[in-house]
Length: 459
Image 1 (cartoon, rainbow, N blue to C red):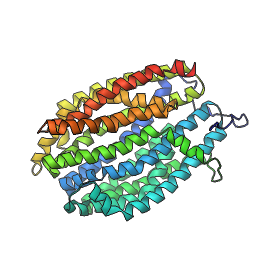
Image 2: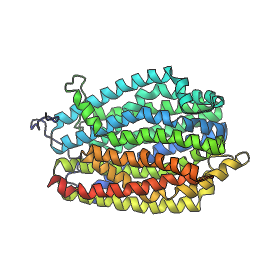
Image 3: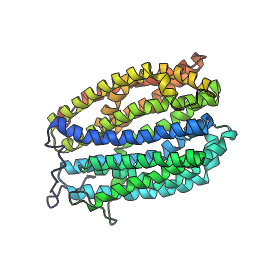
Image 4: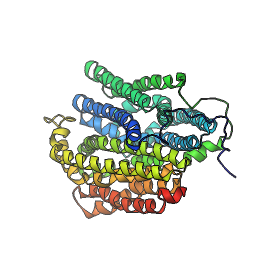
C-alpha cells in the first residue's frame, strides 16, 4: 500500500521564497543557515546563561542536579523531535513534488500529535517523579533540588513541543528568518527572567525553571505570526484523516529520536560513573564542559538542519546535482568550524570554565573540568560530518540507515566503549570512549553516503 498521497495539481503554487529548488547554491544555503544558526546559538546562549546564573548564584550542587535531569528531559522530548523532524522531511518531499495539500496535512497532524503527546507525558512525568529520580541513581539529598527544577519545567512541555514542530515546518516553508526571530526572542526573555528570578529575587532553581518555561511563550507568539502571512504555503486544519501517516513520517525522524533518548541514557550512565569516581564535583564538572561543547554542537546541527531542508526538497524534485553541491558546502563548513572550536577549546579552556563556577569554592570542579576537556576535544574532528551525513540520510527517507548512524554514535558505541574503558582505567580516561565512538561511526556514515549518494538515489 502506498503511504504517500497522489500528487495534486490544484494546489501546486509554491511561493517564490521557497528557493531551495532554484536559488543560487551559496546564497540559498546561507539564507537558511544564518537564521538557523542565529536562532540555535541564541537558544544555546540562553542555556549557557542558565548555567552561568545557576553555577554562580545557586551553586555547583544545583548544576549537578540539573545535569542529572538531562536523561528524563532527553527521553521526554525525543518523541517530539521525532514528530517534528520526520513530519517536516515528508512535508519537504511533498513541497518538492508541488503537493501543498499533502504538505499542509502532515503539518497539521504533526502539531496535533505533539500537543496530545505533551499532555500525556506531562501527566505521567509528574505521577512517577520520585521513581524517575531513583532510576537515575541520584542521591536522595539531591532530590529536593531536582524536584524544584523539574516540577516547574515539566508543565511547559506542551508549549515546548509546539515550538519544536513549528520551528521545523516554518523554516521548511521558506521563513527561516521568522524561526530565528522566535528563538532569539525566547532566549532574550529567558536571560532577562533568569536575572530577575535568580539574582534579584533569589528564587534558585525554581526561578531558572520558571524562566525557561515562560520564555517558550515569546517564541510561540512570534511563530503565531506565520499563520497570518499571505506568503505561507502550509495551512493548519483540525479535520484530518490518514492518521497512520503521522507514525510513518515520525519513523523517518527515528535518528533524531535516537539522538535524544541516547543522550539521556548515555548521560545517566556517564553521571553514575562520575559520581563513583569524583562525587557531585565530577557531575558538576562535566556539566560545565557540556556547556562549552554545546555551542559547537548547535552550529553543526544548524548546518545539518539547513542541509536537510535543501536536500529533501531537491530529492523530491530529483535534482542530484544540487543535492551534491549543498552537501559539499555543508561538509566544508563543518570541517572549518571544527578547527576553530578545537583551537579555542584547547587555548582558552580555563577562562571559559571560570565563567560557570566560582574559583573560590569550586577548585576541584575546575580542575576536573580541565581534565575532561583534554579527553573530549577530539570529538569535534568527526561530529560535524557525522551529523550532516545522518541528516542527509533522513532527508532522502532512509530512516533505517540514518537511525543506525544515530544509534551507533549516540548510544551503542559510547556505552560499549564506556563499559570497556571504565574498568580498564582507574582515572578519567574512560571519557575517551566518546571521541572514539564518533571516529568509528564516521566510517560507517561515509560508507552509507557512498552507497546512497544523490546520483544513485535519484538517477
